[in-house]
Amino acid sequence: MPSEMFISPEREMSLQQVEAAKAVCGDCMVIDDCLTYAITNTVRDGVWGGLSADELAPLYSAWQTQRATVA
Image: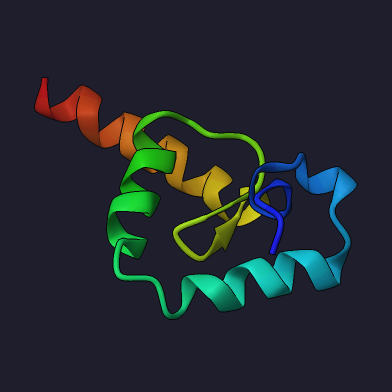
C-alpha cells in the first residue's frame, strides 16, 4: 500500500482510499500516538490515528482551547 495514500491531501483522495487507510489504522499498534501527533501538530492532510483530516479538524480547536486553559 503506497504511503501517499495516508498523507495525500484529502481532497485528492477518493472515499475508497480514505476508507482503506482507516482500515489499516484499525490494526495499528501506534494509533493513539499517531492521533496525538496529528492533533498536536495540526496536520491538515491524510488519515492519522484512524481519522480523516475533516474528522480531525474539530479536535484541533478543542485541543487548543484546553491548552489555553491549562497554561
